Amino acid sequence: MKTHYNDLKLAETTSPVHTRDVRRLLTAFQKVLENYDRLETAGEGDNNADFQGFYELLYGSGMVMKGFDGPLFDSSIGRLVVNPTVAPVMMKQANLLTLRMVLHTLARGYRATECGGGYPYFDEAYRSGGLKEIYNRLDLFCADAEDRSSKTLGEEI
Image (cartoon, rainbow, N blue to C red):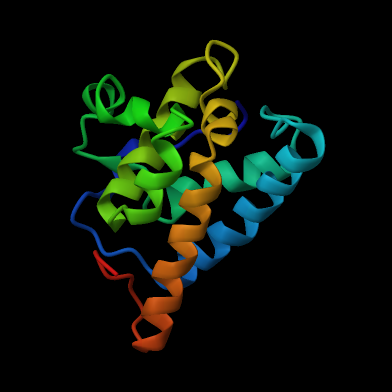
C-alpha cells in the first residue's frame, strides 16, 4: 500500500467527529458504492484512486481510532456487518460510535490482510447490504448536525 498511516495521529474513541470531514468521506464513499454497483467490486488496491481516496478519508475523518480493540470487536459483533440478514437492520439503527467501530474494523482488517487480498472485508460488507446502510446512516448523522448548525456529529440521532 502506498500510503502509510501514522497511528499516533489517529482519533480517540471519544474524539469529536467533524461534519465537514464526514461529508468528504461520504463523497468518496459514494464513488466506491457506485463502483460496487457497476463492477461488483470496489477495485480495492493501490491502483484504484476511488478506493484509495475513500480509505485515506476513513483515517482522516476519525473513523479509524486508537485505543479501540478492533480484533476483539471483529471476532464478535463486528462479524454482523457481513451477515445479510442482520447488517442492514443493525446499521440503520447504529449510533455513531458503532458506525466508527465497524468502519475501523473494516479498514484495519483490509490493511492487515494485504489490502484485502487475504479477506475481502469491504466486499463482504457490500454484499450483505451493511456498507450501503453505513453510508446512509452517516449521511443522516451529517444532516442532523447541519440541521442543528453543529460542526460535529452527535452520538445519537
